[in-house]
Length: 513
Image (cartoon, rainbow, N blue to C red; front, side, top):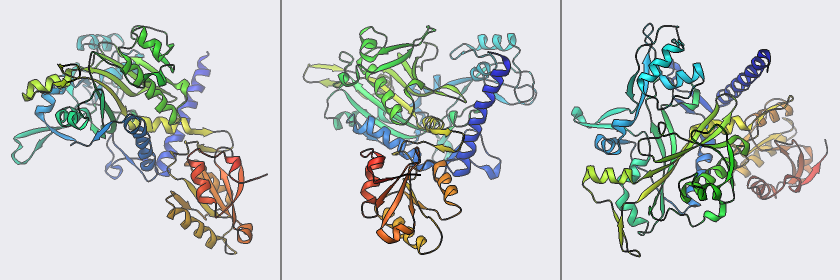
């Protein structure tokens, strides 16, 4: 490929990303936090459109991993005492390697800087090796061109104190999992002392990132959705494994250069993945991402190398989504945490966290399989993959059930009693618990464009025929097709459309343009 062609391609991708972010900020999906004070990297506010979209992604996760799996769910504090993180190993291991510019003092995460400048994935490499790479490739400060100093460790947890006097040290949690582990004895009883059982937690996590420069992909405060599946290490099976055993996964194994397509069942039988539970939740993760609108061909699973794995993990597969702006990005990690966490907490707290299996007359320490999801990254991926630009219009082709607003209502004209009738329809739908907006500003074409731009699936137009026979026009966002339906049937028709129970062509009498 010629250099000029590459440049055009890069500029196009950059333009699409910039267009999407401009739309997201202008229309109220996300905003950089603390703008009036100059902003702080790594923080975003979710606006009036971003908040319901994010909440719907979370609810979809609950449908898959809580309701669908029969899991328990808890909500524990985001601040935890230091003892918890001593036991979990985070104080010792939760570190990134950083360097600082000797000229301007700007700090950088070394692994990201090396990858950005050379394309090399050096995650998990030792300090001396990274310093050698920086010298060999003459990597300088990207801000001012100054010389970079030595590489050193930086613990990325936010430290705080609990109570007056500063005697009790605490940390903002970097993951939600520890709240589940310290509650294990109570959760075991809640699960009726049966294995396997899952416990979910959705909430904020905090990581004091060294130099977040990738927008929503690298945040200092973020939302996680995690499931801890406790099981007998002698029986790492799932009762519904057969449901998705034939699903195909794109696997990029550690140390291999090729991505291979393999059925979940085959991956387990050949030992490519460690056990049936791992395979099951990899398959379920893929189904979840597809349900959000991520194309199947843009989903893969990358096996972490020994260097890349977290200190608690024996095997980890990252679910990655291909994006135009950032390439393949991790949106979830499925980790086999063994009995690391329960054993450590038992040792440090002096609490017995073993369980007795009456049916087998055995006492064990449960092992744990953890699917962990970054909701903010998924949010970005959903936006990017729904953004369409067909030459005539730009719009978000969001899944109907994810759209932040269900329907828009507007009068064809601002006279002849049409606005009054449109407001009546708007109030009818609002009382029926639809997320609905009223728009009477500008031409009908501009109003359609505004609705399409933020992903509203359906627009309802009130015209003069409405005053005669109480029918309205329903317009579909993606196809721009229109049908005529009665106001009386409108709530049930819209509900069926949004739930995917009704094809649009069957929602009323088709109209020709």
